[in-house]
Image (cartoon, rainbow, N blue to C red):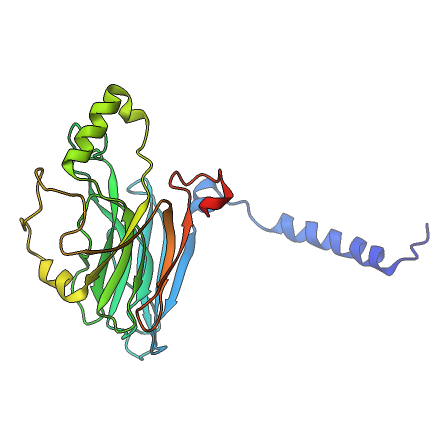
Length: 268
């Protein structure tokens, strides 16, 4: 047989070499297969000297996958190795403040309040809140404290304000009316509300830090909204991501279905 096409000849030469190399490589175990680190996000600091890295990796001792944040600094002091910035194992989507002093991120550290209402999460549920950590040191602390999960957030250009979106908060009266209407079957459905956009100043977030028992907390609080947050806008859809114009006068966001299912084009 005469091979006239040189590409076929090259393929015949490569295949035996590939099979030989595959035979030399040892087979990996199932644990080794899952024992990888996925880089889920990278954000460079405004001065270009630091990098925050979001990772997802297996934690065999806890039988779970961890989401952690790491900090790499090109300052000659860290030895060229990233240092672990957060320890909870539930931290994602980091974003630098424009002045480079803070890193904001989402974290599912806290459980729900429990209770009989079908609109309240169980004690085992986690509510994704917006957190801040300072590059000057110290522990991360929550900016949002409501009972609704934060879907998206953005910084103001001057680093003084954080904008965030959650499902439209309900008052206790609204929850009671919803539970009365649906009675025993409400646990099998979710109230499909749209989102609201809020703003909160960093100064107010710091003031609320370490001050449990502030007015509005507890089982008899009026609303699920974060104390001190200002309502800016609402949409019938779920907000997936957002950004703010440099002058702070415009807010842009991308939406998706409130059920997170792709059912209608107009929702996106």
